[in-house]
Structure formats: structure tokens, C-alpha cells
Length: 207
Image (cartoon, rainbow, N blue to C red; front, side, top):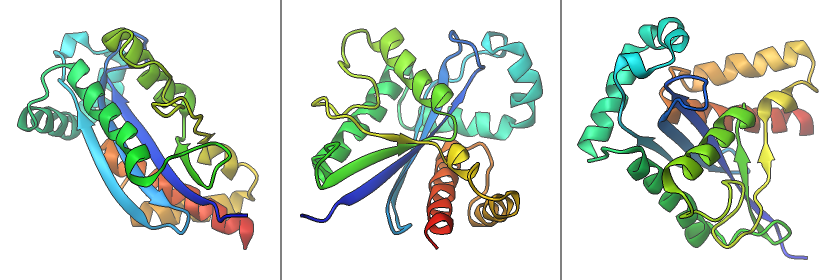
């Protein structure tokens, strides 16, 4: 039997609020392998709407405390010439599909597999799927859990995996990851943290 090579793509997003109508502002990605080696990270930023467009509770409780991140998202999108959510989503999906070309082909039962990592799939991955439908119509055939050719990519949630550890061990891992990568709400860094969190949990479970 041929050896299975696994790649992990950790994802994190920032939005203008928790509502369906609130746009994604940024998608952060971290690609790594099963050994804990980070292969690459990416940030995809879109336009930042006016303050009154934000969900007001999210603005008051979160974004007012992180205006530096909001400005960084705005500046990055401007520097990269991204003026619409459609552009941001296309940039992200082009990157996502290209992973299959560069590191795959990924198949569910084959020897090269891609596992998506998210600490809140119901929010992050579902929000990306909703944005693809809302802003890109029928351009993308499958939800994010699939490759362009329709192969299914499994999703793992480190927060659920962590629940099987002792409280002490789970806390130790979180503290270690905080020292490795800042959890500063820049989605790229947060994706790195999610990947490192996953790797540390796997190590704890197999040691």
C-alpha cells in the first residue's frame, strides 16, 4: 500500500458581523503538512464597508477594539487592487483550487489528501460557502469542502478534538500555541494558530 501524504489547510475569516448579510472582510490561510511544517500562509482581503454597515454589536464589542486590523485589511485590499468581494472570493478560490494542482491531486481515499482545519466550521466555512453563492452565483459548482473536480476534503475542528484531552493538557497546548503565534485577529495569523493547535493536539494524542 502506498504511503498517504496529508496536507492541512487551516482557515480563519473576519466578518463585519455574525449575520448572514454581513460581508467577509478577510480570509486567512495556513498550509502545512503532518509533521508541523508550515508550507505557506496567505491573506485575502476585501473592501471594508462604512461603519454604519457593520452589525452594530460586532462593531462596538469587537471592531472598535481592533481598528488597527481593520485598517490593515483596508490597506492590503487597496495595495492589491481588490475593490469588490467578488474579487476577493475569486482570488481565494483560485488559490484553493491551485493547491490541488501543486500538491495533489487530492482524493478522499487516495494517497494525497487535503484536510481543512477550522475552529468553527459552522461559521467560517459556511460563511465562505454563502459568499460564493451570494456574490459569484453559479461560477463555483461545489462547496468549499470539495476540490474543483468534486473530490471531498475532510474537515477537522481542533476545538472538538481538544475536548477529549484533560483540562490541564488542553490548557497547556493553548498556552504553547499562544507563545508560537499571536492571536491578534489578523486572519492569517489566526489560521497559523489553528494549524499549530491541531498539530499539538495530534502530538498529545499519539504520545
